[in-house]
Image (tube, rainbow, N blue to C red; front, side, top):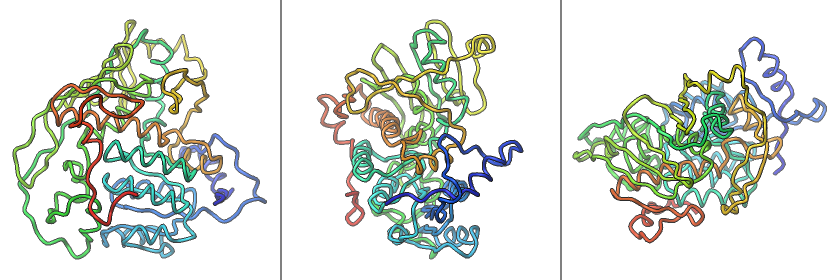
Length: 432
């Protein structure tokens, strides 16, 4: 399917609004002349509560919301109303994917649905913007990689910190040696929530509880399993290790420019039935080639500290600080080619490639729909980043040091750990 061109009026509106600060920047690749424009891209939005609603409204700047989908009728109806009377509304996302007027899909569902929906959307000929974390297991990422490669679809993951100037500058400073030789990275994510036991009850009539559960084990409805608090259940997510970790570990590993070779972790586990079951008081330590260590903790100031033999810098969503940052006033960074892994050949050599500065994460996605280039948070980088999050959770669960083969994407000589690379999927909802 040849992608439709962006309507020129959208591009002009976005670029002329920059000076006034009213609209984000859309840039990187030229837009076709007005005479060559076709109809606006048809966008279908799946999962419309919380962040799903946010990304749907951002996507609406670049096309026409043609359909919305949510298993909660109240959420679905509210979403339809927010986009006027035009969108079709569906309970089952497969009905949305079957529509020929849908070119692009946004996915803002709970984590356990991401992989299957992205694969199904790609195979239906749609380009996809999916919220982070990309996967629930490491093996899911391998399936996604194959599907995207086979279909040639553009997939952007909502790890938008890659498009934030603070985080990008921190990564560039590390890569350009502004803190000397990188030795250590310390990441703080924040605490997992605790709670329970919770009372089972009948699912509300507006919610299709069976469809919400999808491929996860069928269990009685608990209000606390659903909507925002799904994050604190291992069945549907990975707690802070994948929630905040999908952001911060992605940036840390982007700077390290390599993959872990060892991981170990500790945690306490809540002793409660029918309550939140993600670990508490957790900590993880990774070893990377070159004797670089990365620690992940749930206590301290949220953010990332990079330490080298000649200085250190700290970055989070409001701060980029450290003496090397202050020195940028007199010694600005060079705009040079980045060296990054060839993911098809992890045993060096590395390949060079320019990485444009991105201002708008959603805009980058729609630029790439036009160019068919890989977006800044592409499938391979985000599979590798969230895999590191999953490694941490597996190490916490087993409570021992594990050796990781990044090329084969398996644990070395550890059957118990390798069994945790995937999860059993409920009949009828398998990822194929």
